[in-house]
Structure formats: structure tokens, C-alpha cells
Amino acid sequence: MRKLALNDEILLKIEKPARYIGGEVNSVMKDPEKVDIRFAMCFPEVYEIGMSHLGLQILYDMFNQRNDTWCERVFSPWVDLDQMMRNEKIPLFTLESQDPVKNFDFLGITLQFEMCYTNILQVLDLSGIPLHSLDRTVCDPFVIGGGPCAYNPEPLADFFDLFYIGDGEVVYDRLLDTYKEWKKSRVPQGASRREFLEMAAEIEGIYVPSFYDTCYKEDGTILSFAPNNPHAKEKIRRLAAADMARTTYPLKPVVPFIKVTQDRAVLEIQRGCIRGCRFCQAGMVYRPARPRNLDMLKETARAMLKNTGHEEITLSSLSSSDYTELKEIVEFLMEEFQDEGVNISLPSLRIDAFSLDVMSKIQDVRKSSLTFAPEAGTQRMRDVINKGLTEEEILTGAGQAFAGGWTKVKLYFMLGLPTETEEDMKEIAVLSDKVARKYYEIPKDQRNGKCQITASSSFFVPKPCTPFQWASMCRAEEYVRRAGIVQEAMRSQLNRKSLKYNWHTAELTVLEGFFARGDRRTGAVLEEAYRLGCLYDSWNEYFQYDLWMQAFRHTGIDLDFYNLRVRTEEEIFPWDFIDCGVTKQFLRREWERAMCAQATENCREKCSGCGAASYKGGVCYESKN
Figure 1: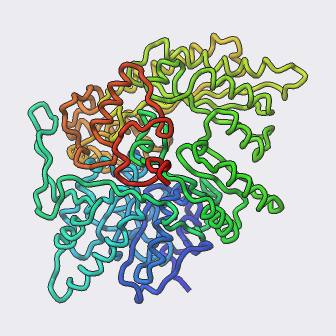
Figure 2: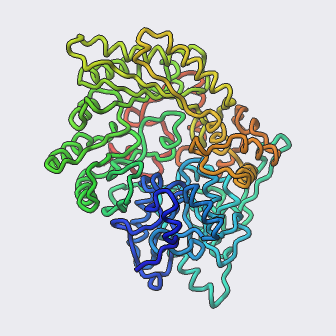
Figure 3: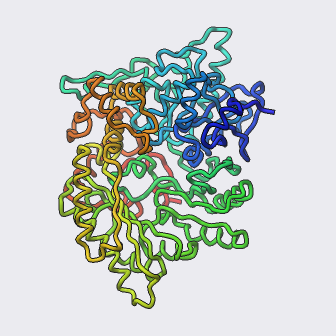
């Protein structure tokens, strides 16, 4: 029987002890003496969020298919246990074996969101692993990061030994094989950490930050970024799995003991997106759009639902409506599981007749709400961001939804976008009201009570590897002012009683933008904020903006330098050494088209020559198959 790392006294004192005991259905147990590699897979957030992440489940399954590797899970301890572990000097441990993370060969950390960065330092600190990679010895695990935020790894460069850029299915096996080779030579020949990192740096898609130097100009921008080690490549090319039918997928995902954020089976129907929204990093760096094979999806769905007992399955992608066999997979799931009460969830749908028809088949329309993302209130702004959605399509779709029985609609918008005017802000309220009017066009005797239109605004954050990477941001006060303009406009609308408006935390947005485009110097702010007590920053109740501002003062880093200025065409970005698949020339061309409010066709309508065809797969090659 396993011995738990936390005794009963502690487990009885903390919230949700099931977060830390492991032993869930489908979790993998192995003999640590019979494996060559122990890999601690970390999502630096609370268990309920980390266990909802598909990428972690995919890599966990893939690694554990290897007989020589045992992959285990670890998450950030919640604030109650964090303090107890520090007081009792309990090292951070994995769920499966309950062994200290410090004893593992690798600590792999998912970089999903910039405001989880202090949690990364928490994980290292509680594990007893030196925060800075240069302070680690052969007794410490290699700390590797991957995920969306790895497309600008520089704010975290001092804390990681290496980064994996791109789809995990492509070269992780080669990296683990390389580690085994190095490990065999370590004892007899005294091989150093540096030697393994040099071997890893030879692998495509692997970035070792200590092998690169940055020089700066007097104005604070980057003068040069270059390798300082002969094994390091000048450009790191993003890894992309060209054929999604050949990649591994978890047929037995781990089933949590407690309710998690996404408490259901998740079926990824495609990776990438054809749309080209200019603010969307995922839509750029996951190009080309690569659908999964229908037969593979059917078999995977059968296996997952059988092996988990889940009563709901989500069809996951960046734009589900663009999966060409969506109707077929939905009809299969409905027919296959009609007697088992399995619900089907379809996020990321466009507001069109086809999507609404699909939704009407799988949802109880009286209980559910529909979510649409117009992103902007005016057509000009939707053309600036290349949303590819007209007001007519939005209102027609809303009308069809109301006629189909829906009464609740959520509308997502973004404030602070490049070229935004006060008219654009006010038109968010006008468009929301027009949507409500479509409901009241239905004869009164055919309505299901009142409608509820909930409009939500997030604030624009320029992301690396997007056409908007050159854009400036606003200060927090300006974001709040713009939200106030929208809120006031909502109050003046005819159907104001049917309208509800809320917005994201502006201060959080400002920090997200700072780290999204930060260079290596910004890591000092992160470390100081953690030292001052910042943790779980994405949770409003624990977000301490005043401590972050104190960290900026202590380090002398100028927040405005990173957020407020428009970048020049010639400027070297901290992430320019990464070949993300789409070329910088394409991104600049899209930036210039945005400034002229010119839309660009989606990838199925016309190829824009973004560069992603070099991966020889997906939508770029559909017509050739």
C-alpha cells in the first residue's frame, strides 16, 4: 500500500484533500526500480484546473506507453497546503508515487497562461529545486517548459533548463532517448548537466536558454540575440504533427475523484484554425489546421467513454464549425450513445445556421445558453481584427437561435484593440441591444419568457507571433474607462432590462501583456513579486496588484516601456529566434492590412502564403489528397 506524503492530521485540515492523494481511476502505477526515466508532469495551477487540461492528459498517456518511463502528475498546492508545507518542511510530491519531485529526472511544466508564472516559482521552491537553472547540479531534475507561453519563453529563461516548442507528440521520444543515453554515461564518465543540454539542443524544437546571450541598445530594445554554444541553433523551429491520425491519444484518461473544471471526456477533433483572427496566438502558432480522422475519432470516443464512465463528451477545437465532418461525428455520438444518456458539448461554434442546427440536436435549449464571440461592436473593427463575421450574420444567427427556443445568449467582446474609437466601444451596447430585439420580434405567444443577453469584455493583450505583436496596450485605468463607456451605453438601450454587462480585471490584463512580450529582464520582476508573496495571480481573491507594483519599483523595470509603445518594423523581438511556422513578413503584412481595416480570406477560401504549408499537412494540402 502506498504511503501518502501528507498525514491524516494535515489532510483533515485542508480543503479538498483528494487533490493530493492520487489513486484515481486510470492513473498509472509502475515500479520505480524498473524504469530508467521518471518524469513529473506539472500544471502550475490548482488540481481542478490542471486535470482539465487536454495537453497534460495526452503527454501523460504518451510517456507512460514507454516501458522505460514513468510519468506522474503534480499541481500547485492550494494556498492552505502551501503554508503548511513550508511550515512543516514537506517537499512537493507527485500524486502517483507520493515521492518528492526533486528526486525525478525531469520536471515538465505546462506554460498555459502568463499569470500562472508565480505558481511556477512556487513549484520549484516547494520542490527544493534552485529557482535559477545555473544553480542546479546533477542531483536536480531538468526543468522543461512547453505550451502556448513557450512562444516567448524569455521572461522564464533564468528558471528553465530547456523549452519544448510545439506539438509534444513530435520529438519528445527522441529527447527521452537522448536523456537515457546521457544518463548511462553520467556515472562512469562524470557527465555534466551541460553535456545533456548540448545533446538536447541538437534536437529540432528544443531551446536551451543558457546557450544564448542578449545585448541591448541604449533605448532598451534588443541589439542582438545569438547563441553562445556551438550546439545551439540560431533559429528554433516549431514542431508540428502533420498527420493528426498518427498521433497518440489517451483512450484511458485519468478520472478525478472530485469535480474539476472540465468534468467530461474531451475529444480533440482538429488542431489549428483556418480563420486568421489577428489577435489570436493559437490561430497562428497552431497552423495549419489539421483535422483528425473520423474513424479514429469514433473509436477514441467509444474507448474514452467506456474507460472513464463520463456522461458528457466535448468536441474540442479552436473552431469546431470548420471541422468538415462535424455533422458526421455528432450524428455518430448521438446514435451510438442515445441509450446511455451521454451529453455532447460543442464549444467554439460560429453563429450560423449549420452550427445552430447541430446545437439544437444536442442541447436542451430551454436550459442552455449560446455563446457567440463578435469581438467588436462595429464592422470596421471586425475587419481590423479579421473576425470574418458580419452584423447581418450575427443578427440572423441570433434570430434563428431565438426561433429555435434559446433565450440566453452570451456575447464576447474585446476592448482596447488597435484603432479602436469611442464609437466602436458604444456600438458594443448597440449590437447587444440589436440581438435582444431579434428575440422580441418573435410573437409574444411563441416566446419563452424574457431573454437574457450577457455581454462580456476582455481587454486586448498583444501576443507574440500574431499580427498585433507590434501594437501598444493601454494602462489599466484606460481599460476601465473604456468599459465604463460601454456600461453607460448599455443603460441607454431600449432593451436594457434584458442586457447584462461585465468585464475582465484590467490590472491582470496589464501584467499579462507585460510578460507576454517581455524579454529576459522581466524575470527579475517575477522573482521579486513571488518573494513579496504573489501567488495564484489569476484568482481575483489572491491577486495583489500593489505587490506587483512594488516589485516593479524594487527592480527598476519600467512597465510602460513594455506595454505602451508601438514597436517599429525593424525591432528585434525577444521571440524572433523562434520560427513559429508563420513568417514575420506575413504577420507584418497582416498588421498593415489591419491598419487599413482590410480583411483576409480564411485558409479554405484562399491561401495567404503565411508559411505554414512548409509543414506539409492539414488544410494546406487538402486539395492534393
